[in-house]
Image 1 (cartoon, rainbow, N blue to C red):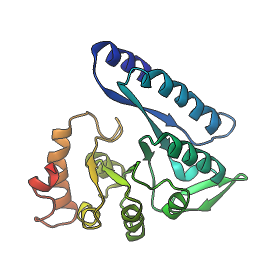
Image 2 (image 1 turned 30 degrees about the vertical axis):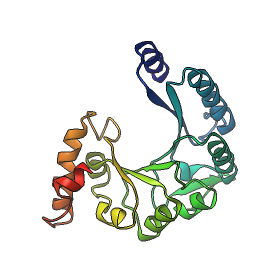
Image 3 (image 1 turned 90 degrees about the horizontal axis):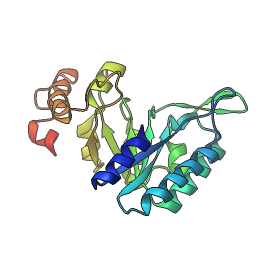
Length: 212
């Protein structure tokens, strides 16, 4: 569907960007990361010649990748200087190495250059103080999906804390299951109300902060 949208955009003269999703390895099914990135490279080469569409690399569940894959992805992203989305990043996630699962944190992503000014974290999980510091130091951005976060995790990231750390915060709708539409105005409304309810604080996220 992404390719169809891209072609329609080209024909209509609309500038947009396409996120090429790269999934973590699973038992005998996944396409190697290098091959997934090469597919994205072909898309980028095709669309960039029109100077109308940018290709964004979207790494799904990055904490489940082996270190070698993360290093490869990081080097390609740095070479392209393209937007990078890190989706579903829990504060204490896991990665797979030699068929074992070990504890992991965002510090590993930072060590491999994946928390920089080109990176946006898209997650439903609250950010710990350590993650906030890593985001601030690396100039990474954070996409907040209030309805999706509340439905999936029954928690909300502390947007006030993100802003206090000078982290750039954006607004998203989340996945179709938890964010049933693409109405960002509805997300603005939900953001202001849910934060007050979850944190039991009527001063949280006023309308001006939500709009910014």
